[in-house]
Image 1 (cartoon, rainbow, N blue to C red):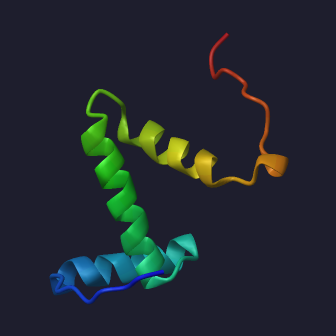
Image 2: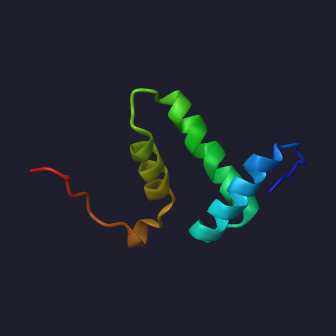
Image 3: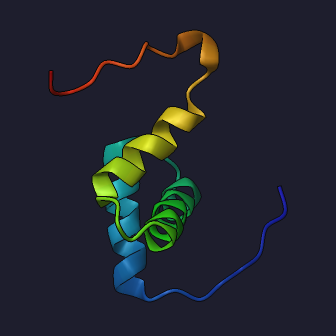
Length: 74
């Protein structure tokens, strides 16, 4: 993976540190996750952000461990 250094506001960095600990991610992983969700959210403004986040998580699941689709409402 290619990496770069960036400047980021201290308050955002601290928020990412806390979120990373809760979500069991590295700080870098948390910032990348927020960036992916934000980018996908901006590219799909008609979709709720929770749906965008869950969709990205499902795409990252190994296919062998994927659960069959079950609609939330019947």
